[in-house]
Length: 151
Image (cartoon, rainbow, N blue to C red):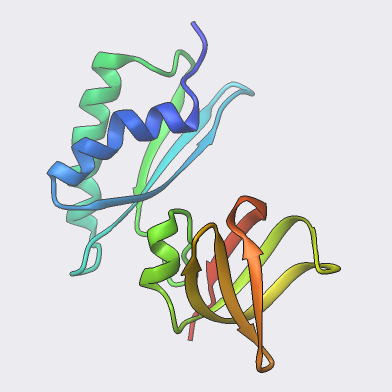
């Protein structure tokens, strides 16, 4: 049996996490070399504490035990996105408008691979970042990693 993809795991776990009252902001999957890792990042308007992580961990563990999408050994971890959270979903680029972000791109866009500035938001399939009084359009499909810079 082949391990489920990141997208398949999101599809499996996201409705359950939402039903508990949390947003599943991201999933990190590292499998192979004996012991793998499945890390879920959750958030809520009230923030995330240890009890929230434990609650989601119990639910996710039960689902993963029944569905068995990962045949190898792995550790399940549940965490908050943290202060330098990754922006993964299109809605995140609207939610964190006005914050300073660092964006790393898969390829050069306008001769650059890294941009740091104030996130303006999302315009169709592009994110807008203001850097030194210049608005820069970055195709969402070219974003490798976008993170909020802690203040």
